[in-house]
Image (cartoon, rainbow, N blue to C red):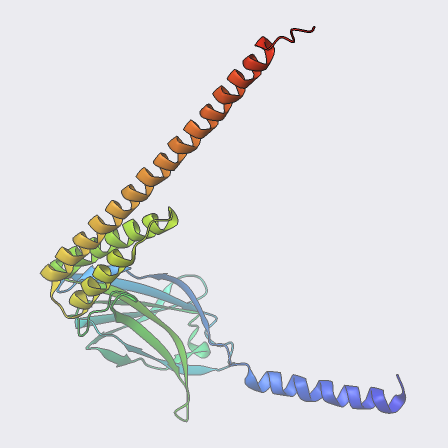
Length: 265
């Protein structure tokens, strides 16, 4: 490679590195342990906890504020500030669906922040089978001087009522039956159409109809699979009879050839 080409290559490499650096999002501080329920019934009480570490790295900051939001109702937040020895050096309590903490500062010795949020699971605004409907348990943001913010993380959970949960279980069972029938080579067009109607009923909050249609779709899929299995067994049986017939026919042909005598012999 000539000196000119090497110079051009170096310049191109430098440009690419700058572009990659500009495109890469700034990493936020580290989220340690987080305990969040996967699902919860509407109206039930839930609690979630999160731990934040490496508070002043990525980006490098000497101090900042924590903001939190949730879709829970009747909410209580507890924010504990812990030093490097594990001792709690401060605690704040907040009520409401959002909060902004005091300044989190390295000068105060805070090395870790522990958040606990508790409240009532909200009603479902819109039902969805796939993906399942969810609500925001907690969303945390790092707020810096000048109004700049970094999203830390958001945790969501599936929420349901007893009626919607029963319909979802029926849909899940129907989906399993359809998948099983399809894997075994059965035609599941009718079952799939009925299943789609069940999903539409579920998302329209007609859970009784959704359950009825889902059970029908499962029955159709199971019937299709049984018919396919019966046909397969029948084909195996016919194939077996053909093999037996060929073997028996071959045997008798061989015997007939053995019993044939040449009178001139």
